[in-house]
Length: 338
Image (tube, rainbow, N blue to C red; front, side):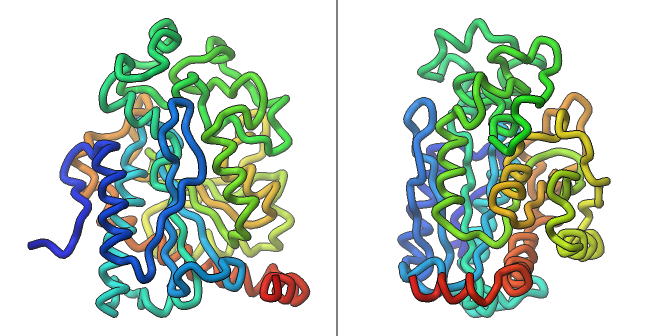
């Protein structure tokens, strides 16, 4: 019998993901728990999983990192990575074993790790089961798909690209490519910022927790978007220090600082930097694919897992560094005494 629960050998369907989260939280109930942080357009649960040595005690007492996947529907490698990290990190924590070069028990004793594996559950359902499977099908059937078929869908069930919907201060100037200024499969920023229930859930979750650092997993390109010109200076080089270490240790190349908010604005990572005033990283998993669609799901282990499996632990360690460097003694005292 396998020590592991999550199967990423091929397409990982939403119902199996929900089931596996429950199995894992029951199996590792001493340190793994789930929270429903919101509902999607179609009423599906948006689930956060917390890995903590402190059980359900005060989550403000120590550094924490947020790892998210599946904001873009067709990028389900990001979902598979989050789920497999939960599975493997829990097993190695429980067994008190080293995972690659990381001592997970020490890391989780120091840092709480939060996952939101499926930020856009309706979108994931659409790419796996077709537009007809959506409760919003009467509206979706008339929307333009930028690609060959429903497997190119990136948006939520309202036809809004969630990673262009966050109110980071640039929504008004965020450019819509011609044809994407109305609901469609991708790149429509919505009619107002923070309009979507999925966006609201992530914003509220971050506002209710003091995450030291956030990572948003996407694909493809094997690169990292780590800074934008609107917020880079506030980190006094700490974001670049983390990026350089990531670049030395992993295959995700360092991109240039994003300079035009008309192009980069309103992504989750941009919002997090602007509003949470903490570093945030967008990791593009897997080799670049022309046209934007990811490689077949069956290639996940080969293209993603073998390279990215310890990145969550890397960022957990960096969250502790951010906490120690950015947070003042006053902030720490306030958090400890709340």
